[in-house]
Structures are given as C-alpha cells and as structure tokens.
Image (cartoon, rainbow, N blue to C red; front, side, top):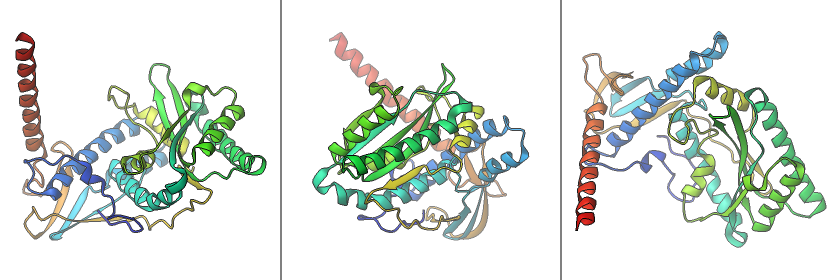
Length: 337
C-alpha cells in the first residue's frame, strides 16, 4: 500500500490490524488474504446495488468498482492493480482512512495537549429515504450556524473535525444521519451539544454523546475516519442494494469530512489510482493475475492461485472450532466438579 506522508509516527497501514496466523507464508501473504475478502465483500454489495438500478449512467459508477484490483500485473516482485477510489469500495475506503488518519492525527494531538480531545456525537430523529439528502444538508447548515453563534456571541471558537455518518433501521425502514466530531476542550464540546439541542428542538438529549478520547489509542482516530455508513445490521446482515444506494446517493457531492477552527484542511496527497505492492511470497516473474470471486483469489490462466484463500479459510475455521470445543469441554469439567 502506498505510504502516506505527514505522520508523527511511521504511516498507519490498516492491513496491519489483522491477526497474524501460522497459516500465512509472510505478512504480505496475510495482507493479500484479507484484501481478497474485501474484494469479495465489495462485489457482493455491488451486485445487490446494480440489480436495483435501471439508469445505465448510475450503474456505470458502480461498475467502475468491479474493475478495482480485478487485474493485478506482476513485474518480478512488484504487483500493480488499479483503484476505483469510490466510497463503496472496501479496499479504497481502507486506503482513504489511512490517508486521513495519518494526515490529521498530529494536528489533532497538537491542539489536545492542554485541553484534551472529545468524541462528540450529535443526532436528529430518523427520516425516510426520500428525505435523507435534504436532512443531511439541514444538519450541515445547522452546524455552521452553531459554529458562528458560538464564535460571535459566546467567544468560543470550535476546533476539530466533523464527519457525516448514516445508518439504517431495518425494522422501521428509516435512515439515521448523524455527526461525529473530534472536538477540542470539554467546554466547547458541551457548548456544541447544548446549541445543537436548541437549534433542533426535536433532537433528544439521549441521542447525543460526549466522551473523552484516549489520545494514546490510535483506534480513537480510526473510528472517525473509518466509514460514512455502516453497511450491515447489528446482526451482521448486509443492507439491501436499495438501502445502500439510497445512502450513497444522499452523500454524493457532500463533504463527508470537514475541518474547522485551527485544524486546517491538509494538503491531501493526490489519490493514487494504482496500488503497488511487493509480494515476496510469490516467485519473481512476469504474470497477469485475475480475480476469481468464487475462489476469493487472484489466479493465473493455468489455474495457479495467488493466496489459496479458501484452503486457508477452512484451516482457520477448523482451528477456531477446535479451540471452541476445548473451551466448552473445559468449562463443562469445571461446572461438573
């Protein structure tokens, strides 16, 4: 994965969050394994979305993601694949999250040294799909009014980053747009929440939240930049294609992330369109690898698999079942004694 500059530590790579296993030849093999599953997840999502759309122009946007890393060109130990950079692509979102985390972590930490950082959630009641985009625009305008009000009338200058997120209530068939903030200073965070409740009198205090950020925990920053929408229910069931398209359409053309106050928008690196990796577990050669969704793997024309994803998946599942059975026997013996 391409390196991101302007980090106070070595750049954060989200593939390194995966758990290392003895079933992988090396770290690059493990990273590619999880990347294959992200590709698989994205294609499954794309199919459900495209099946609900009649407009060919709209379908074309989603089809661009189908080609994301679909073909990987190998030149000796260098592997190149194209990127779509779409919000609904799991791999490209992962790259974007790393870029944003690396870019904004230092400025956020700089302003937190004396006043702390707070994770603020501001919500409004759920709305129907047809109302979603206009509701988000109302919330953006409302935040701008609050920010100006605090500066002019309360002499409070807000400093932080705002993110739009949308979730879905399957039971009520409604959408829940809300804001997440990383905000400096508890007084400012509380003032923001207070004026939000005054600005939107139908907002419930129970839906709002302020909590201090542990600045030593990088996951605090990852959470803000991770996604614009959760794509599954609490039970892990993927939203329907119609629901996902409604969400993606509602945030199209809007700034998902916005800095304000002393946090200036970073000069973002030009979005890379080609991902370059070194995969030492594969013998140096000149090859063309094509993604096979049934195998969840990239293959050569002769059938050679890059990762052997399904084999590793089965081995890991077996290992998990063995550990689970051992645990059940252990707890059973303890209860018996």
